[in-house]
Image (cartoon, rainbow, N blue to C red; front, side):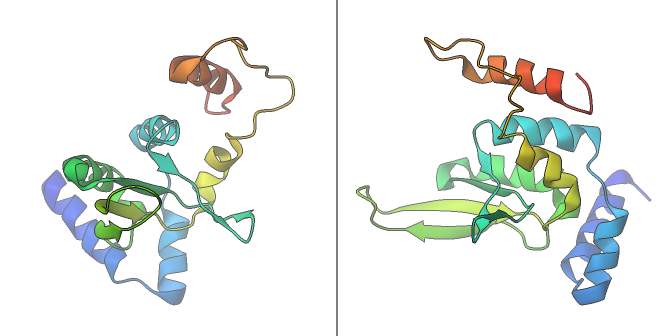
Length: 152
């Protein structure tokens, strides 16, 4: 079986799961190294971890303007085993901006995302590296990699 057939087969399986079958499936999956790297990068700019009633849901939401649909499709292919529904288009109205469309998807809620949810709250011993100006993503990434239990 080719790698593409394997991925497609796994993708089809994860789309049909519900209830206890979905819980069992989620116990068998873990983030691979590439997914971990992509997750860190996207959480620094393009993705978010929504809250429900002020508590973390431990899932990741990816959204982009419709003109970046190819990028969302790429991210979807990276996280396919953590996603139950393919990317969808959402019409956005109001908010002081023109009407627009975005493409989005979200992962299953999964304990693998707990560390990344906590990443937003740095331990008290970590201070910003540049308090006068914009430290930027690279500085935050250096802090994160030093703090990360996965090492860096």
